[in-house]
Image (cartoon, rainbow, N blue to C red; front, side, top):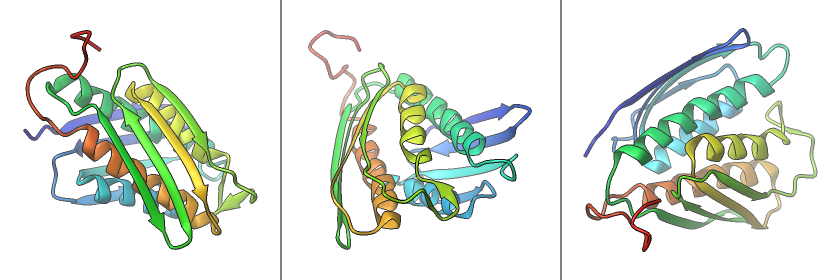
Length: 193
């Protein structure tokens, strides 16, 4: 069942417009003004099997923080809408993802609670002109707004670019599994999430 979710966010710092279909055909167009961020969002959408149209602009001349955080808010809100509108979700998803000499583990639970644990042991301040501290913040904001539990663990790595990209790809594959519909019942012994 294909559902297109549209979301916008307007602040004094950024303007974000998003259209998301998680049952898409990998039609992806992303513009944030931060080329490395665009690349990562494209990877997320492609490996998630999504159609994603995202247009954002803002004060990236000041800092990368507002853009990355606000995109995470809007994308998380869209994922939460999808999570709430679907019945019979697989709920859990996981992926062990290699990228050359890097290996990342990602697990998600669409539990409605919003929790995030990351183990991303960066030793550089920035990659692609973006502060590495922003990636744990992106994942935390995404999980909080998306109301799902997200765990990312670095098994090992030798390249910061690969560590970040593998994290996005692993998340994409884990979400793809978790968002799969396998019936009409709620995947919980409680009968509710």
